Image (cartoon, rainbow, N blue to C red; front, side, top):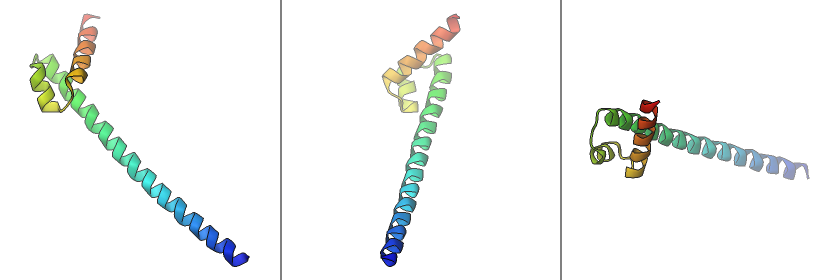
Length: 81
């Protein structure tokens, strides 16, 4: 009975370690993706402020047309305030 308890504890510990490693890996991947997206948005805003064509902004940043249009609307809103 004691031996089985030790084996279960080892299995549980191994499962926890694997879960933590996978969670950390996913967290880093998601954080990196969000950072890249944020940087693309910052670049798009600078391009919008310089009057660069929408299609060029989409091409250069990799953002969608809808994303760039939303950024344009936000930029226009802050400029009129």
